[in-house]
Image (cartoon, rainbow, N blue to C red; front, side, top):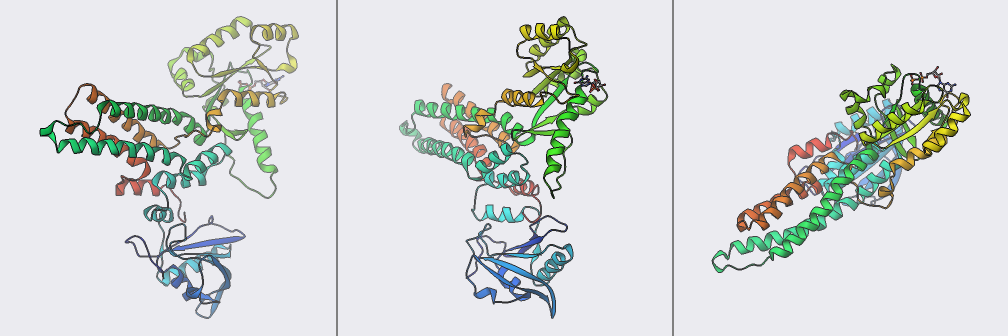
Length: 460
Ligand code: GDP
């Protein structure tokens, strides 16, 4: 028998595949009446008498008029994504058909789903925790292998498991200390302050590591912010275009696919690099000469990687050493890239090789040695941390909660040292627990949920 695990008993409907013409369109229904509503417009077998996880061929009808021949997949609660009764109708992919079918379903009692509502229901019905639900959104938007991996491992609960374990240990201490509050007269100590201190310090180490992983996580999700710096005419725009054109070529080589090409982003070895200030680049602003200017410096500091590009025919050793010195002081990882090898003076190249053996020699104009440049770029960003399967925080909301957890844990630590009273200590621990719970969704507010799920698309 159909049932719903939460108080919202209505049935929602939305197109799950992208809008527009496609080979098929999948319309999704979820809710207590999903199967009954679909059955009213479906001609074929009686859907209400079928087993879960079965597929049925038939027609969708508006009265006597046949709208389409379809396949209907049935999922009976709780064995579905939302843990509610769910139906997926695969129609032919014209927007006319899809709209007609959705209209019919609404007429029979379904209501249009809000953005992310399917995932929200899955979360509310305990399919997964909040961090995992957010990973669903990340997974949909993942456009590189690295971001896909990070989202997938989070969705499978890697990140949440770690948080959950720590939180449970802390809950234990909180309850012990609260128990002590009931025995204030007796002056007993259920929770050893030394043990608590050890736990909090352990927690802080893990939290620090997670906080530290955010930079990497952010890079995986949004791309490595990269700047090409160099004098006017060094070949910066030529290099950028050469890299971007290769990417464009690869993208359009995949026959029959159309993908929005993102200007100024390239995918190297599964990692997205996002070139910043490329507009300025095209105006050939003098980035390196202006390194001393604070505005330029700020911009370069926001980069995770700088390609220092110089024209072999137009830069002397003193200038190169001076620029490299400035970049070293900036503290952002950078590569020394010598351009226009096609017309370079061999003696100068030799001198440069002995002085700066890590220089990469390219010709942006002739697309020479760009593969070497790319592998050196990959080496420099070093995503090994990610590859070892360590937990990575990619979500700004989690990051926020982790930073707040750290603050309150430091308060707990300070409190132990200053021997503050138990009620204050318990308060600080509760606060830490609260922020940790915010990540996994044990602590939620309607605003928070609305905010998270509104970022999903309709039908997800
Ligand atoms: P930017 O000011 O740093 O953006 O430099 P541009 O990309 O506009 O390049 C300046 C000039 O150098 C242009 O005329 C390019 O065609 C030329 N150029 C760029 N790369 C090469 C190269 O590898 N070899 C040669 N010979 N010329 C190049």
